[in-house]
Image (cartoon, rainbow, N blue to C red; front, side):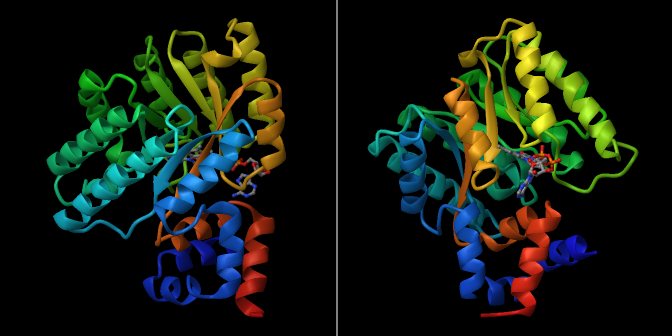
Amino acid sequence: MLRSAILAASRSARLESLLSKAPFSRDIARRFIAGEAGADAVRVAAELAADGLSTTVEYLGPETTTEEQAQATRDEYRLLLRRISEAGLAESAEVSVKLSALGRSVDEQLARELARDVCAAAADAGTTVTLDMEEHTATDTVIDTLEKLRGDYPSTGVALQAYLRRTEADCRELSFAGSRVRLCKGAYPEPESVAWQTALDVDKSFVRCLNALLSGPSYPMVATHDARLIAIAEDRARWFDRVAGDFEFQMLHGVRPAEQSRLAAEGYTVRIYLPYGPHWYGYLARRLAERPANAAFLGRSLTNRR
Ligand SMILES: Cc1cc2nc3c(=O)[nH]c(=O)nc-3n(C[C@H](O)[C@H](O)[C@H](O)COP(=O)(O)OP(=O)(O)OC[C@H]3O[C@@H](n4cnc5c(N)ncnc54)[C@H](O)[C@@H]3O)c2cc1C
């Protein structure tokens, strides 16, 4: 119940404005979010790089409902990518972007053009882009956009969600040399018609997708904090003769940092999803709601302001 209350709160603009200014929210946010400005993201990415961790940086802007907002998001990514390049971080830092932030719901063609601009800026900076995956109604658009972008920017990657019934087939489809696929469980509430509903079914699908990716020539990016799935990925990678530079692990900033360090010390590439931006509250609420202990922590903070 606390989880759904927090998720509901994450969608309330009034609560967002109230809580994002509260000192306790900002204290908690520091664990999961680099800061509000691009410079904060670059600073934290440099600290993580010094610890042997790569990053994928995402801008948390306002919900995009106009063409101007979509263009402003594109401009923010251009600036971010310039900063990444100037800081000498292009080897370790890439960017993640949502087509919705680039105006998918305003005009799909516009979002594609702006995504192309972001890919061009990434190529100029010496790095690349991964397209986040969103609600299942957007999956075809995201994959179709990826295919078009890969024509000019072949290192562009995409996230796929193991909870979708279609994803094992998508993994096979995208399992070719040079294809960068981030496999995650999936973060949106989805109906039974398209998505596995139990944790066990999602985990089983994750393993089938892992097998499909690791057995082929693509570059899988295994995005999970789940200890059992990480152990299975390590085992499957050995089975398929994958060496450490042939695939990578990805985790969210602030989640299981000791495991991030352990995997990096084992020689794996570990990439940290590093969000920043003024609209961090919704992201924070979703991260806290993912874990009962975190949700209780936020619940206590909300009722017990210091
Ligand atoms: C790099 C990266 C990129 C992602 N990109 C996308 C995307 O494009 N589209 C999408 O739909 N989803 C995306 N996700 C989110 C993903 O789909 C899951 O919702 C999220 O990662 C939680 O799933 P899990 O695999 O960690 O497993 P879970 O079963 O949720 O968690 C396993 C264990 O990890 C730990 N843990 C997990 N979350 C937290 C937390 N917030 N705080 C503390 N401990 C935690 C706990 O110990 C938990 O028991 C991404 C995740 C990562 C890591």
